[in-house]
Image (cartoon, rainbow, N blue to C red; front, side, top):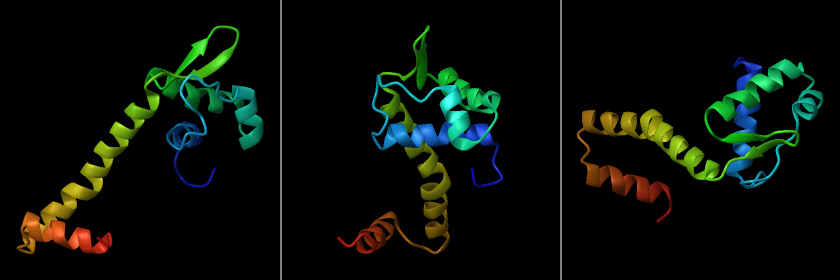
Length: 118
């Protein structure tokens, strides 16, 4: 754990990152609460809070007596949410700033293509 955000949030985000990068595919079992707690050297209640956040969002689900698993469609939902966040945090302010500089959408698109190396 490495920053000022709550540890349970960091646990949830690390699990989300593993789902997004494919190291935790859909329908695969996630590490247990105790495994997460030992690995991150945190209280099991904190690990549980992070996992429960993902359960509440529908990213993970519990199989009684077996453990937690990645829900079907979880990766697609996470990607959609991350894209929405990216648009709100980066694209919208970029477009607004470009407009204040008198750049048209076409000019902005050309600048982005050049930066991307196209």
